[in-house]
Image (tube, rainbow, N blue to C red):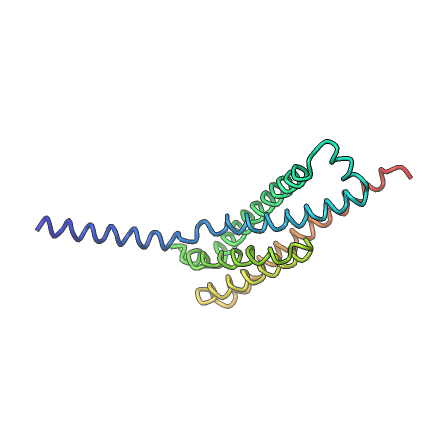
Length: 204
């Protein structure tokens, strides 16, 4: 009897491991997606920076002190680190806003809605892979990232709409849109003010 019970426990244990692996299978997808987008953006930006340095006549002077491979590698590493930090911060903010919206509008004490959204990271993973097709222009990669983000938002609404009432769903969408609209406008305003202050400080 004890032997049979131990066999059953072993089967349940292995079954638990199987489901655990499937539940957390996509846990590393966001990190890979961030690395992919950071790499494509940094490669594209590095190519643009090299063109600008050449047009200003600075690139030839830099070659006197550094190798061409060293310059390219340094630019790639610097931009990759910058984009990685920016995208990681955006990921953290997005998760916080989504969970806050669900806190306000979803009656979900078990957190089932968050489990439904995990597969959405595959959208960013696929988008990160396809972003390497657009390496010639960093603007196109940024636009592609915005399109992927919109697709993820549509996926989010589709996955959770059945668990929300109509008013809760509208509130969820409005809170998400209002936050990101305010966030983008605020960032643009800061950059414009910074640009104007720098231009005003330059000698005429």
